[in-house]
Length: 448
Image 1: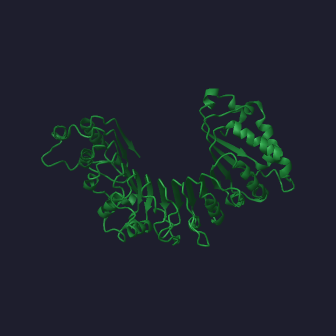
Image 2: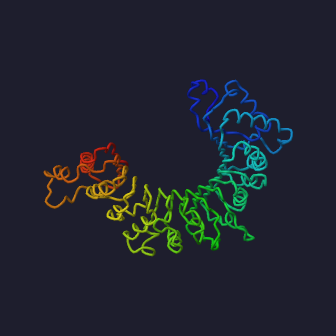
Image 3: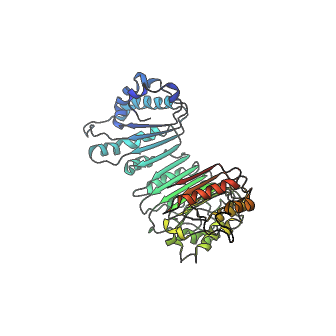
């Protein structure tokens, strides 16, 4: 909802009723001095109510027009702040999540934002218990040091420097957090979310979703756990992008019975941990339904696997009951074609996404035949050649119909990803042949 007031008049009321997310760009000084309150008192804003809106993003600007001499008396400004918060409650009565953001800036605006942001944010946290912090870490740090913040249920933040204050906030909310999302482009130490400097371990009994997006591959992993510690006993969703930050299986430990989805970049570090601790054995994760792998040739070969066939076997062994499997990777992995005979053994697969895998039409049709539940498939552009022995172009249609019809009664969608040069006519022939033998095949797309 970042639009000028005059735009409101151009929208009919039913359109406003559909708004689910709001964005407000605010100057924190104007909240304190009442300027913001004066703006929202205008007729077009005064009684505005968005009943479907559950998320609001607030961007603090630290406007330079307020200089260091403009003192703010927080006590005197309390009525303005309270009135503004009341308007937010009226605007979005079903608000559950707030995303607080401050831009990187310098000079007077930065110092003022740094001075007052923390106290203001504490008030905003009264609105919701699902919180995300974006960008300006120095300003966020002031708020993180407020000991009163200890009962958040959702927390997302990015670290650009010292991680200690973020870690402290995470630990303070350990008993209430349900989802945690940590990202950083730098080498940071997040071991404190599990164990503090005195050796005390935290437990997150209600944490269901954990996402780590840590980019520095040369980061030194932290050996921060010991046998028996189970900080995350009820995880349902784990996402590990780029690096695995620990030296043992502490992120996987204790959630075998609850884990439902896994997204992981298979770096050498995470492969070592999974192998060393036998994290995934057949039927060890009965509820794991969705797996999303990102693989890198440079990370895995030849140190951890001898060839791509052993990589495929490792991937599938981690997902013995999964119904949705996605395998992605660097374009260099075009040489990687997981054994279709291996895939055919996993007869429960319903959706299969294989990036940078160039199959033959015969691979695809054999796969569909072997996996009765399969409904959705993604591959790179297929090829018809080589044809089966004794089959010519003139006899191709007769051969396919007589040998495969009907097949894949649940198969509906084939998404074909463009890779390098391909023969569009050959791709079209593959799609049409498949449509003739799959009675419920309804959709095909070629995507660059």
